[in-house]
Length: 121
Length: 106
Image (tube, rainbow over all chains, first blue to last red; front, side, top):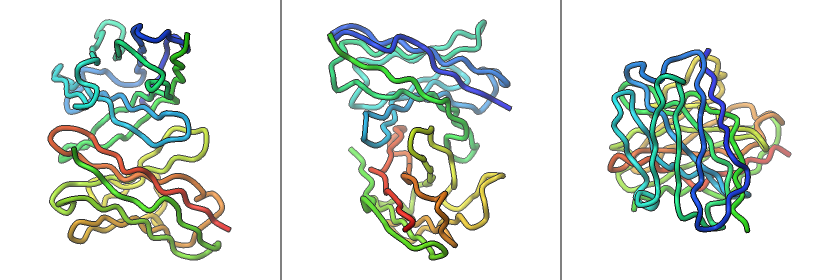
């Protein structure tokens, strides 16, 4: 059974870079037809898709965040990483890692428990 | 940018049927998924590819699509169904979530 675990600093200063890691167990991030997504949720608000990296290394990012995001993989450690630069208080959120599968269309079949990141000086 | 619309909240009595709508331009020409998120927990998938239910999801959760609207139906509402429900689709290779619907089972 695949499990995802987000980790990283819980507090980031404004204008700095948010970095999170998603450690995947029970599956290889290079498994064909899986897409490794990041989704965030500001306190008390809804879900926002951030982007994904595919099993082949292709990335797609939210247009609203594209200029500040990098999603990458570390195959040796079976990890997916998110970097979001120039953060502001509006980036305060719970950040989820989610596996996307499905074949015909991607859906998020497995989620991590989430990591709260607060942007504050 | 593409947007999905959901009612902010729905209230039902135990045992009743819950219908949650999700509307978007040409949504019927895309695939939609539905997620349940209980307070303090990560979302879980209820429906994918418009109407498909993953293994482990009770049969009382179902969905349909007509025109520009997808509908999640929960039969026989239970207290455990109190949660936020989000629809989701893809537009121009970007994931889009609806704003969510909070369901209260009174």
